[in-house]
Image (cartoon, rainbow, N blue to C red; front, top):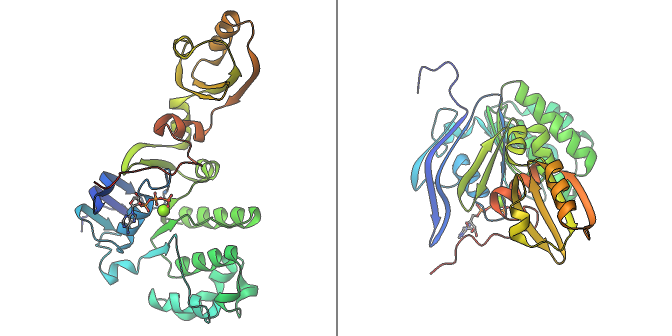
Length: 311
Ligand SMILES: Nc1ncnc2c1ncn2[C@@H]1O[C@H](COP(=O)(O)OP(=O)(O)OP(=O)(O)O)[C@@H](O)[C@H]1O
Ligand SMILES: [Mg+2]
């Protein structure tokens, strides 16, 4: 342990992890400070769940080091300081919500009575007596969150915690997380909902094919990359379009071109002057999704990244 007044809640350094021929993570460094919320984004297969698995102690690091709350997550004593929501979480179907929450409290070294306020915190007090096999998918996500929070964790590790939540539940979820974060809890979560990551996270880390390809504030990530995306039907060829000012990426969908640029006004002036037949013009603000597209060259929502084909 260091003497540092505020050691990181999580520090992963030089971590690589393989499943046979598949390199799931390659040389990843990632730190989460106490009171910081970091969103991990990346296409399917990018390595997000593998990274969470290492941080929770489910997987042992094959290369590099993993420390959470100053210790090794493979040790039970260290894991008590963690609150975890896994991507695929199974509950004993006959246990009641209350039993699950009380059990999680005791396993984390808290009194069973810690369960009640947390069920209120995540808005499922009315499900207390319901068996886990009889709550809906979105309600199960909330039970999982309650079990993660009930141990009063120093670090929350949440793998796609908002999957299946309706809009109201999502909003409540982010408010709960923000309150914990403001109370000093470090949070690492994975998500595919980019707008939410942008709104809530202090930092966004983008994984692609097992490597960190960007780490920045949400605003930094978008401003660094593109100002606007412009889509249109045009007679101009790709090389002419790429030569327009500030063009960062260009893609064709059938007869439409979509390009991201840092200089939208200048691009439009020149494009209209060069192509009298320009049609179906649309100009949009480039959000985090476009930023990710520019970084990974893949549509974040749709891609099933082919990470590696085993030899
Ligand atoms: N147990 C396993 N055995 C073999 N390969 C695995 C195993 N778990 C994951 N992989 C592979 O490792 C890579 C990273 O997977 P991982 O589950 O970490 O991705 P992810 O970013 O969480 O994806 P998703 O968005 O789909 O949840 C993928 O190529 C995946 O197929
Ligand atoms: Mg995953």
